[in-house]
Length: 90
Image 1 (spheres, rainbow, N blue to C red):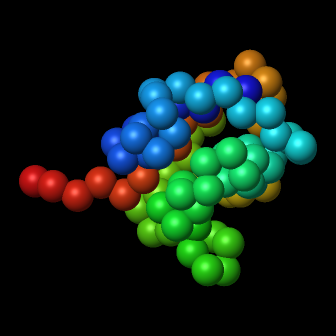
Image 2 (image 1 turned 60 degrees about the vertical axis):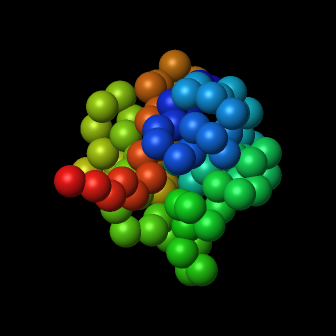
């Protein structure tokens, strides 16, 4: 699955798009695989309780997962997966 990453996650992952081969078919499976491959990403996106940090957003086909099943949202290989970290500025 192709995952587009933005802002500081690009530096951690080494590019705008990364290839991820998750063990399952949910958003959480994709993110857990990303943590395995890019360990530094864990503290950027997850709380200690293994929830998304505030202002971290995941979009599947342009729709925020908060409007679906959250981290349990099922994803297909062909879905557009985008991961946005918190961004500050003004």
